[in-house]
Amino acid sequence: MKKENPKKGVHQMSLVCQKKVKLKTRIRAINETTDQSILIDVAKNDKNVRARMAAAERIKDQSVLIDIAKTDKHYWVRRAAVERITDQSFLIEKARTDEDFSVRIAAAARIDDQSALIEIAKTNGVVEIQLSAVWVISDQCALIEIAKTDTYYSVRKAAVERIDDQSALIEIASTDKDFFVREAAVKRIKDQSALIEIARTDPQDYFRKAAVKRIDDQSALIDIAKTDTNYSVRKAAVERIDDQSALIEIARTDKDHMVRIALVERISDKSVLTNIAKTDESVSVRLAAVKRIDDQRALIEVAKTDEDNRVRKLAALLISDQKVLIKTANTDDDREGQKVAKNRIRRISDQSVLLKIARTDDDWGVRRAAVERIDDQGALIEIAKTDEDYWVRMAAVRRIKDQSVLIEVAKTDEDNRIRKLAVLLISDQRALTEIANTDNDPGVRWAAVGGITDKRVTEEIIQIILNTDSK
Image (cartoon, rainbow, N blue to C red; front, side, top):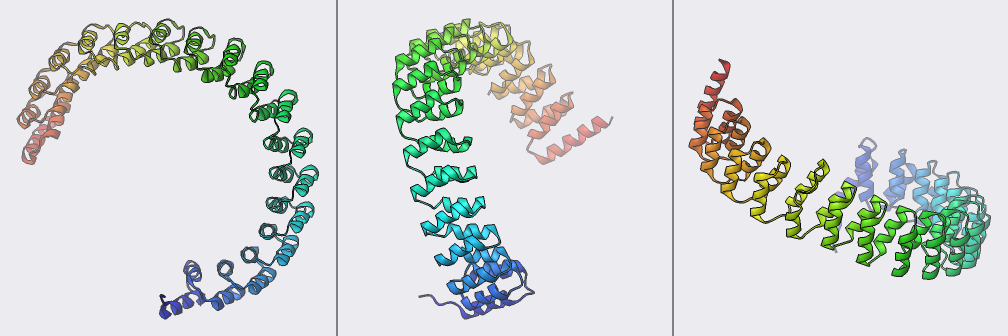
């Protein structure tokens, strides 16, 4: 067994007792010491509240703790003592009489005696203390009485949350005046007939919905989904229905788009989903349906014909057939349609098709999207030199790997932005030195300087550039 170092104990005692030592240091020493006599002395006599509280939290002697809980002037210290006391009669007394409600709460939380807890819960008058008692009461009769009669809704709610008696819960769910108490009761009801009754007859939508979420009876759920006047109740019912024929029937008749979206999520018949994707009047419903279909022909049709560009775009994104992607790579003329076309192109792998689009399409954005997928170096060099659009040429230059071609572009291209990009991709030191010395654009020359690794050459060129710029 490891023996405690006596010198360390003396040092701790010194830190605990010295009032001139920083409080943080004293607290640390109090938390480390095991000497009960020192802890008791500090807890009873120290002028600093935090020091007394820290000491009380480590005292084991019950009689000392009770004395501190009775006599200390600060509720922090009394509460720290109470939280270590096990004497039930003292805790009951403290829960009833301490002047500070947080001490009374701490005492109530440690009481095991059910009759005492019930008395506190019924008679204390301070909500927080009543709650502390209710949370540990197990007597169902007492809980039911509190749930039916207490003045405070939060106390009634806490009692309801511990009740198992179904008849009591059903009564409270239908009679309590407070929304939260009724909700708590509904959430604990298991009786299916009672839940169905609430779901069909309660005048408040919220409680009908809460009841529906606990119903398993499929016929009742189907009836509610068809007949309830509130969309959120119908939606809650739909989310618990498994009968596919019922779901399909409701999908054809329900007028609320939120309910129909919920139905789309539950229907498994792909042909029904395809029909919804093509015909539903709501964009949101069609979008939800498109997400759940994989029929390539249906997706193509939606991508081509839907009146809303968001639906067309989503359908196009879900097309995976290469032939289809190629065929419909650029069929939309509007601006949103061009975005769809670019997304299609980014999924095409056929190099000959990409090259044709990059060379012939009228939209520069579409051409650039194609260029970004091309691997053919000869084609990229051709496009980098000849395309009329700066962005397309830039995209081509970025994909060129041949250093000699990049050097040629960096030396001869008329656009300084293209030359600068090519320079940034060059690693040949001679070429970079030549460009840094000869290019007529400062940005290109500085880009070349940045790629040169020889510090002496770099310094010489920088001096030349600075002298040239000063003139």
